[in-house]
Image (cartoon, rainbow, N blue to C red; front, side, top):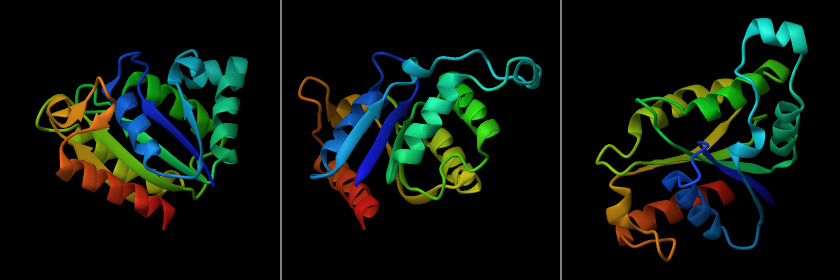
Length: 175
């Protein structure tokens, strides 16, 4: 099984990148590729730009990575209650190439934030829209109060309840 995983942000210090990296470590004997949205930075999507220049090669490359995966894990950063611009731009370009961006792949959707909300707003948006774009959402989990529940030095969940919930979500991907 090949899993593609990424944090839906371009922050180099992303707590969502830490969460998704830890989450894939729970999968056991599977091939994992962690993508970095910084490697897929493109001009802002617009219909005019698409007509003038076509689809960026980086969008095609990102979509090919998803095509080659058996499953996908995304951890969403919440910016003002919604997707980060970095994720939305990559997604918008990819959806113009292939509407069903996620191609029926099983997915686990994650989100975290430093506060008690745990990025629930963006996770709700993702849960609502992903199936429309071809995702088979197997599980989703919002982890609140990231710095109280995750050891950033050792890169692991320290709250047993949240660790159990994350393990359960990852098992849904393998089921």
